[in-house]
Length: 134
Image (cartoon, rainbow, N blue to C red; front, top):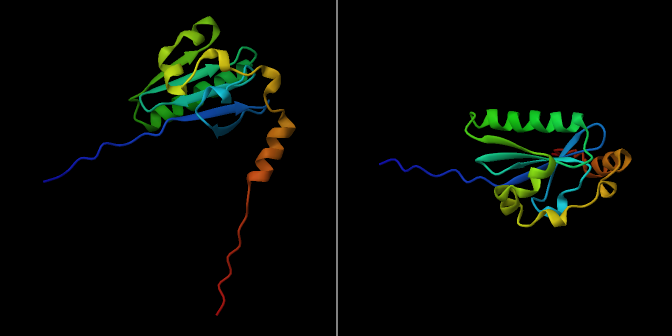
């Protein structure tokens, strides 16, 4: 008899930050959000593109591109929902997945600058060399 195991999906939050739209995974919680960036929340069934009030059109487009790529990897089984403007604060599924409310969003000036993004990335990159000896 063949047993079918249900695939377990871990909710993840991707942040598009800086003017170059660098993408990194952050904690899926309201404290990670800020008004200057775009975030993609992947819940497994739904993909939310949350757009900060001062986020630019390029970031929004990149967020849509990433959400659609993830959805394509899942064979189009998910639904992509864009949360921008006043309706973004009323999407119950998004806030339930994030475990909070819109009151916890940081201001745009609390977002990382491009130089801070680059420094953060440089500090997180490690190269290893493994030498076999006789």
